[in-house]
Length: 154
Image (cartoon, rainbow, N blue to C red; front, side, top):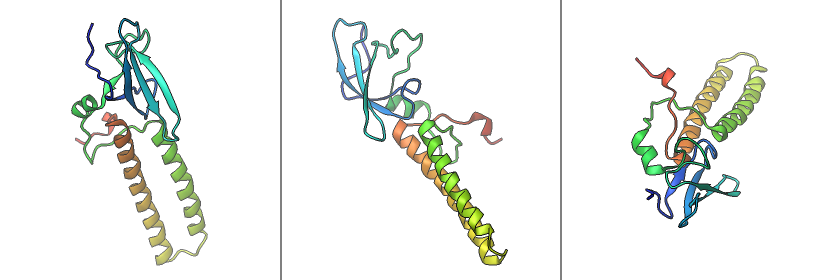
């Protein structure tokens, strides 16, 4: 059996290593799981995984390993699409939301004025841009992102 994977291919496995990009490091001959992939977390921790020639992880029934180019071609994401956050992006969004809520609470302690109202508006605007930054970071890390189909326009 042949494989479409090559050494140094950048790959994703959203089932076992969500939010991580891996690199095919070895393809062994005559082994049940010949494809070796190394994934690196954002904190620099390296993990290795092995796959069958068709990209299945161990005895999985379907392919989970995919080249990043395949992900981009199949799921091109527009700047205006809503995407589902992976675990890493969701954790970042929660951290930022907590910080923004603390600032909002402090701002609302002031007497309501035009200036304090503008400060809250700019805070909301900043939070919106943080969401865009997180989305773009996720797409850069994974090569793409799953769309939120229920939020499509029209």
